[in-house]
Length: 141
Image (cartoon, rainbow, N blue to C red; front, side, top):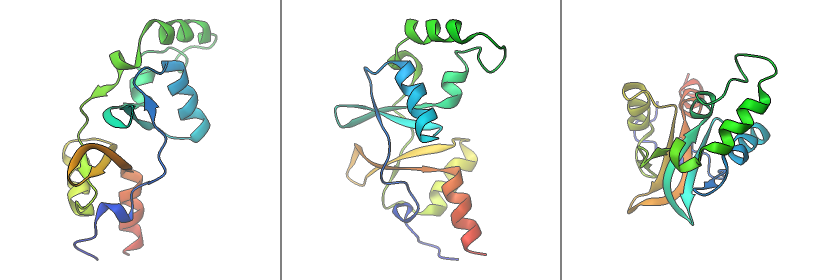
């Protein structure tokens, strides 16, 4: 197993992002369209947060009851992305090792981490998920 492999080798580089002033319905649609569960939130080009499918599910009833789409839409219109997202998310640097990322994911119980430049925590360059780490580990066996 490679011990010092940097996260840049497994991260997703072509990431989907949303702007902090985007509507929650837009975020929900992007998650559906691209099949992602986490989307970094930026202000212009600077990372300011992250939003997850779980964050949105906490607000809506659609997964619990049939015919609640109108209620879900109303809730998503009442709240802003800025109110719902996680601010100042835990990040990893592009040169951090996959082992370090795996430890953070396991201990701190995150499912995705934005990847930033080594010298600038607001310059987003990718995202790494538990799935990325598991796939990497499986390749080693």
